[in-house]
Length: 53
Image 1 (cartoon, helix red, strand yellow):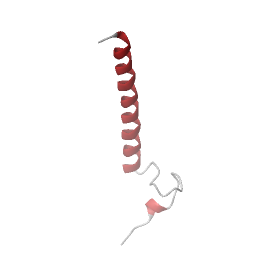
Image 2 (image 1 turned 45 degrees about the horizontal axis):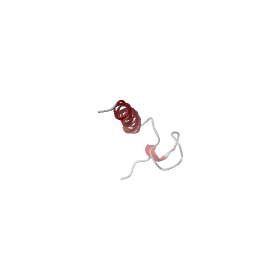
Image 3 (image 1 turned 120 degrees about the horizontal axis):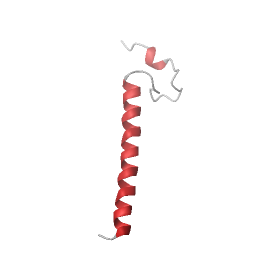
Image 4 (image 1 turned 135 degrees about the vertical axis):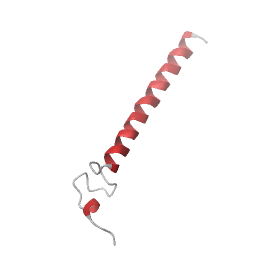
């Protein structure tokens, strides 16, 4: 492996690691009820407080 391919591999792995941390953080916030529920109203929406019976 050349030096440039090693640097490219490190950069790609860094980008993938940052993306994975971001996604996991969003999933954890959403499942705990502190994040956006996905309706588009933001994190203070009333949708997640409704009970669908």
